[in-house]
Image 1: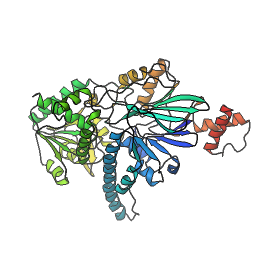
Image 2: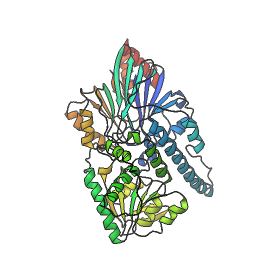
Image 3: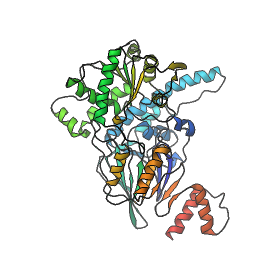
Image 4: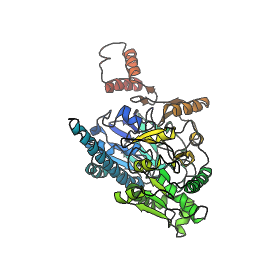
Length: 503
């Protein structure tokens, strides 16, 4: 077995790791690059032949983990996508929304290209491609061991990050030896509304683990929730609006649950809350469908007849006309809109109409990747460009990290320490360099053996991690020959090393 790292290697988006075992190729996630990762790496190229992929094991529905599956399909993939049943439904909504946004952006881009005398380009994939790709999805229950083929079993346990999110435990039997590989996916923050805390893993020989907040601590969630109440009250007193860029799937539903509690407990007046995102509207319906996966507190509310995702002053806008009408509202509204990093969708219109107003507040409640509009605003930009227009930032800006869906450094640390015996190797992915290096230093100080891969790096149990240049040096040494080594295909190099190791 070997694992090759491509997406979310030395970056925080585009999750994609390739397991090769026996004659099978399995992807752990197939996500889309976003922000600066997209600018530097692009989404149009795979470092493998999609036709050769037999399975995609998908940790959850967020676009940076699932977003290139339809493109994988257009390039020839016809295997199975294995994920939880809630993830199937959420992906159907999210990938369709992704295709719709790309189609609109592509139309705008091609109008510009025509004016410049350039050839038009196609979007990464179309809504029809999404429909076709969704036929490859196959739902799997939590805590159910599935044997994909001889020598390879896996099961999902709850990651507590998003409805349907999963930690993947993999049992591999190769050369009469069994080992356990665990892929954390994205680990949830403790005490997230609606969701259970991440389940603990009893054992792992090798662990591929996220490190998104490996260098940071969140504020206590309940403290920041009270802060949100105060932000809303203060903003309304100033005569402004509260604009919340929010991921349509997960974060929006958690916000609705929280606001519902405060309004019903009379800690917050019945303020008008507008959810301006067709995807968020559909996702809220899906959350209600799969409420059997909610935590104990939310389940009690449902069993008592209370809908924790609805209150009287909540409004879902569906049409573009309803969305545009919100831009005429100058005060007294909470507007929750996607995308969470402000890269696309209706949120950009609401920012354009409120960022310049001292009376208004912009509240960020999720991770802002480097290179995104959201990150620029959070980092203190005095002026940003939206729809070709320079907008001054006068509104009050808040970032409530305690509402994050990701575990912070202490949460990650507690989770890995819950594994009864230290893994032989911990491979850190899904984080920017600072976060990964910081968390790596913490683990190294406690005796863990760690590795932070770069794109294209390879891990082989028993061999450790290998860069491509190291591969060529090692094979030269093993063969004691320069014969064709510098031009030898990477696959042949790996096979030679495997033969030497296991001979």
